[in-house]
Image 1 (cartoon, rainbow, N blue to C red):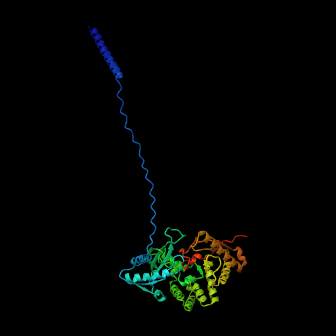
Image 2 (cartoon, helix red, strand yellow):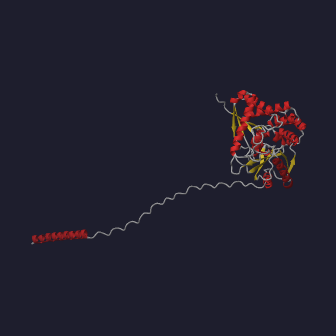
Image 3 (cartoon, rainbow, N blue to C red):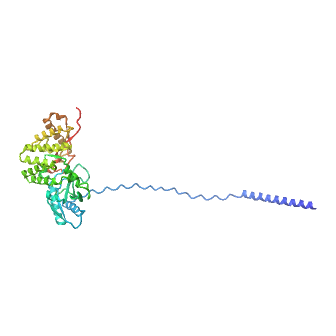
Length: 429
């Protein structure tokens, strides 16, 4: 009986186990036959990365060209700027002397620069009572006052160095002789109408144009500086001599030739007086007084300055439209003889002779005429010294290198018709 019960028990277990196994298989089969789950929805498209390229920086617009105003307005504008903005202690009065204004390119005093000085003095007297204008003389300069200087320079508003000059640049500077510093600056652009650029007699009659370091120092003190900068040393060291030179030049301009000769001669007693402006004055005064020999000694000194500084120009006066000297009383033979002597003594002793013209006429005509004039000067020099034939080279520049550029073909642009000498290497022959 017990065996039978055990047997039944095993069968139940077996059945249960078998049924469970079948059931699991059935479930597995059902699971296998179950349809797959629906596919996952596609991922949203990934937006492509947007790379923003910054545009190149815009090229800054060119500043508008400077505006040139009427002459009287330009002078007043620059004068009010320099005297109104001076960095000086308030509540004090100041003495001001004026070293005559000059053309910023040539260093010459002109009818226009002289008129400008008078206009500035009028403005100061009426609008700036703290300043007292006094004459430019040794006694006043010795008190170390403020000194007023200025340049009036023909320019091209398009920034070109050649061609027609269509405006003037006014530069004023006020400097303190006690401190040796600039205390104020003033600038303006002037139209050309109403401006007389004719050089004063001393500068118009000068036989040689040569680089003058003292005049260059004057110009540099005015141009390219700002308040607080020092006065150029070459100019600052010679200001006392400049007062005497101004007096001598004024005497010549007034046709007081004996007085100018005495003043220029006295200047040579001081080492500070040994400068081109003094030797120019000695030549001119002696020439006007028919003192040929001392005049030529001064001419020789001027050419020597030019040779040392590697550039000088001789103001030969040519017949209009021709390549021969004008029939005047100027001693061109003596000038040529001295130029030949001084240039052959230099090292190197070879020179370019550059002919120049003013703008009147066509470019082709000016080019041809300038070369013919340079060739003529060379031929005249060779007459003095045959060996110069291989040492001098004639070149014509037409009107491409003006110093003045007014195009008036008169006394105002005299230097545009210069004959210029520059040293150059000697070539083997």
